[in-house]
Image (cartoon, one colour):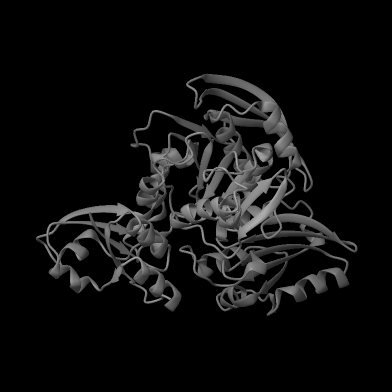
Length: 471
């Protein structure tokens, strides 16, 4: 089998090496010219040849092209270099499913994608499944929990599909240290220390999930230089055995999808998992959950209801909780376990969380994918806004979704609150606003202002994945 792996920036090295280990002939195309010397040496060790697309004219027969879903090239763009080849195209997600074909049959596996709420859902699921020692890939790192204790396998890691396999490989090395095997301390080379896996992905899912959770598509942003959209990429979630999806997202973007096991959730009453009697609070929100005709992994169809108490100060947080509940019910997880896990969820440092500093309540909404809708929903969850500074800003980075400064500035012009813009994102928004607002280059200074003036603070901050301290 001849394979061409495109894009060494977003996990292509891992994919190319994995295929080469199977004695395949593998070529690599570094489309963004970001390949590091250490990775070049790694590819050379496994006889992976780095090429440009012009090289395709030297090949004949069959060629499997493995590309990221956000590739700014069409299939026709690639085929024109050698029209005589017999091409097969697979996304990075699809090849990861192939590479992991015989992995994880004995454990529950969850894949999470969406525009907003992915990381929060991953860590709610972690709380519910903590007794199974979950293996996790998220935008906060590759993690393994043993008896409730977190082990960081790798912190600076993206949520590209190739890093699902990277996370599994890292966990294997911990469970099977070469030195202990050589010394006879381990009598098996197939040990693992986890009983479930939860993988976050930015643009779809590999399809290895027993359940795939699609949180939402609140903005169908363009990818691949406007050749595709987020909804197209995230449709790969339907390669999972069961899909948990927001009802509004299903109806708007995927009404023509055919899949036998779909469980929906919504704040409205027309979904499989719904909610009523919500009592919002910045510490613990209370509500009643009702579920009807949920299709489960073992073939049952279940219905019921229960009460939830968890950290969910806004509507968008409750939607995330419902997605998590739909996922857990799909896996036949007892409702008592769901209730306990959600009660233990306190938010995530580096995402949504609340803290008290002196006399000030600080609410942080930090995310690489902050957009106008997220800003609006975050502001709506504060009841007494006169007591708050609202700080908005952050960093530009490498995620596919960039903030629409014009749209945000138009929205902020309608508000009459104490707004402070901060960072490079805040500076960009400031230039497009009609009304005067305060600006602070360093977001840390906003904390000082709020505390000094005995004000509370809502910080809505777009973080850069590469800046770990602001994730």
